[in-house]
Image (cartoon, rainbow, N blue to C red; front, side, top):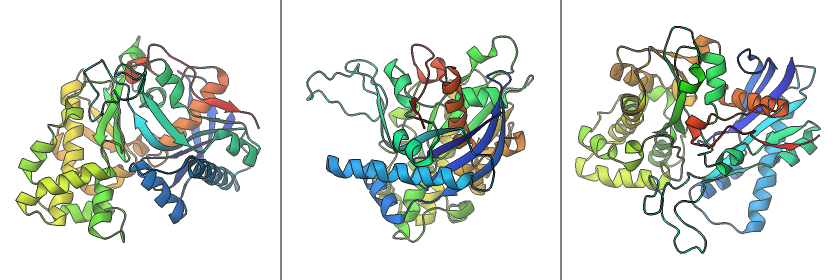
Length: 399
């Protein structure tokens, strides 16, 4: 058994999710035991700096360097804290870091990805270029602060061979949550939603696994709550506020025509597309309907749910028998009920009920990706990310 710490802060920038796990096996015989899981909030000033950068704010390179190191120090502290009461210590850390910018690869000249703006003004840049994804929180700083070998910067290797760099959790989902007789979907609802489709694990089933980002998860909901409460609240507890509203179907239909929802996988997205600017656009488009804050929250919740449903019906080889939810949105009871209403024939549970923590599955995934990198096992699924081939993911920083 190898003791590994997985670390990630997602697009919601709520804080650092840390998972301390014991891992054995390789792929088909992979086993993971969660020893401890916790979320460590960012200091408020640091969180504000991150959110400002994610929203497109400009900062000098010197300030970016300071921010990068500050995030790394927070990740190192989380790694030290999560294992404090669970000796012996970890021998490996897998740190996703904090995404501050994600640009999917552009398809072809004159055919930009959904929500992408051209950069024809930049010499040497064309729409056939590779994607780009930036995570702050250098692994070398974490390794030095903790004395533990750290693997980080997972997305760049997949992007270098033409992939989206996301979603990267699909292979872990396949190894931990497949079932011999059922078609399953593992639906993460973080700031952004992503799905992994798992056919029955028989024969060459791994080749039939697929996945993609479904669109906004909690990102627009959280931003709307912050907007309506002038920052005094950061999310809609259990969806109780949205539950009081009425969905504006005409507005929802308009939102669902967005290019991203029509785009076939592989595809990925982030706050660059479904962030503050998009929320302001949604609010402006809602004005003719005189919606209350509860109505807008209900309609934004329905956008998350409807985008999941429509992507399943449009892009899955068949509808699943079961859906297992994870991420913060899996705790939103109203959202979960709306999804069940739309998919009445599908059994919807959480990954907790399948033996994998829904709150810390993403952190567990990056612990596994670090473990695989250490063993020399490819971590991506090319049919999910669009990469030309399977590659080793992550840069190694020795202790």
